[in-house]
Length: 286
Image: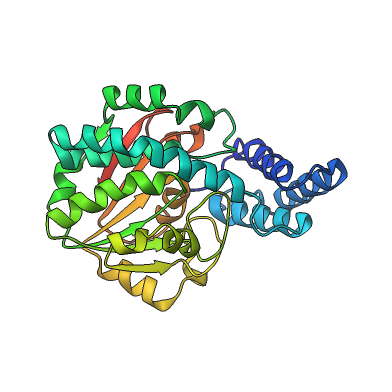
């Protein structure tokens, strides 16, 4: 996905959000925002991949703040909230049509995302709101196509909190004799899952293998990815790409088949996918 001018205020808003998470020093917050503006001035050009710029802007903000993980408390909060919701979600999935419902649960988990301009994660992850999303269902539903491609799944994770909802889909994939290679970020960035969180929460035991993206790049940067990840992506029977950042990067590559599971939380991603904002999407591209 290419950068859109409307991405600029969203990126700066997120820099301000993470700066406030990191420090109460207003002058340091200002330096982080100004550093973000300078990145945009240099790299906001037509045709630039969105995540090239977002990676640069967040890395620069982290450098200025002197903080490698401003979202650490938000990640803990997300995991705690998700664990409380998980029993009710599991019951919903088990009632009927469990694979489709597990996909929906995974997508609803994509609401555990803080700092997106115009998207109130605290409201979206409240129990009442989550259950209403289940009543809505999938706006784009390619789950039947997914079920025929599960032999060797590469699963690109997104946020903390969300990962607990993903485990319900892991279980369904394995029931259908699928193998899962889980892919997490190579280092902290935003509230994305890293190897540290996966191992700490014991989620590595729910899949066959865990790889990392090799860095803290937004989404998957192939230039920074380890060879084993590139090989896994190339040999997968299905890549499951969770969330907007993974869509922004994977849509720039030629790996197929790929299932994009996400909530269209921003206008730019929705527009790039030919959809509307706030849709629950399970789209397969071959």
